Length: 96
Image (tube, rainbow, N blue to C red; front, side):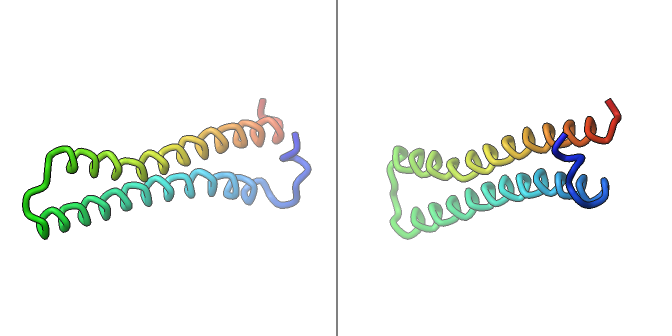
């Protein structure tokens, strides 16, 4: 109901709400980009130092998964927020 009283057209409100989902997707992509940068740095260190224990490789890979997981959490949160705001806008516009 609060969405009905805001200024602007329905198109502007929809595009503002859609921006939430867009930035959630950007966060997920940045997370995957961060993982690839971390893996490339890890491989560079492995080449420079020669033999590396398998435990260190697994630890490095597990650390590299932190950024995509964080990005996916932001994406899921923004998707829920986007959904609830769209449902609220839909109800506020009288389409229920």
